[in-house]
Length: 293
Image 1 (cartoon, one colour):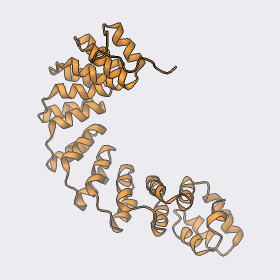
Image 2 (cartoon, rainbow, N blue to C red):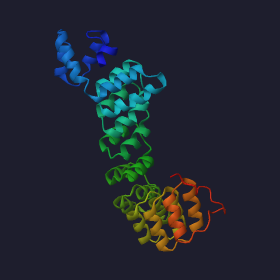
Image 3 (spheres, rainbow, N blue to C red):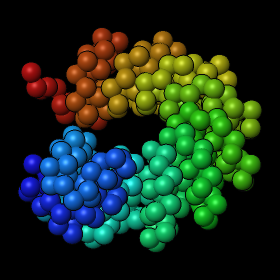
Image 4 (cartoon, rainbow, N blue to C red):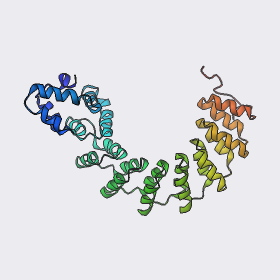
């Protein structure tokens, strides 16, 4: 049991947990003075995943405790974060980006009050995961890397956040195009083009490298023509769909792509490239043809 191992009933640590329970009814039962009621409340509370995380943080080796702190931040449990903080586990700067990624404003505010100040890192986490409210909070605290915020917003497919960052001064259109293509968001890629992005070959590389035919097709429609690089990107990451698209467009760097696929261990990709005419890896030697069964 959670409390019987680390937190005996009515101990100071037990009361600290009760004081920060998110459920007021359970907290009242725990602090009622009735051992039976407290035990019943704790049994119910122990069913919550955050209790297991807190228990793990208290008992595990020191160097791994910060991982648990981040996991507790991810759950949004303010009492869990407070308890671990009071126990000397975790840092505000490790938890703030996690809280922003997940949209937990109370946890973020608590960590900031305790000294967390990596606002730019938290900003990009919020932008990547479409958390406009958290992005606005980080800007209000001093975050100012708006280009990075825009790039992560584009990768995450959030036009709303990309527009927010642009209003604040972001202007890396081609970087945004590459990220949108890599993230597979045709809508955001089109928006970056409207803003002025014109490096369509780079966008094609991003799309092929993550296997997104939709954004690859958009880049082709706008004149992208570096089919060989697109093929090599697709081969390096094992994306057969975009590799076939590049071959159909006229890519001829089959041996170079074969080398990329062999190096990364993509057997099916190697077979595809050989079927279309690859005869050797780019340097004349095959490095990974003995694939595991």
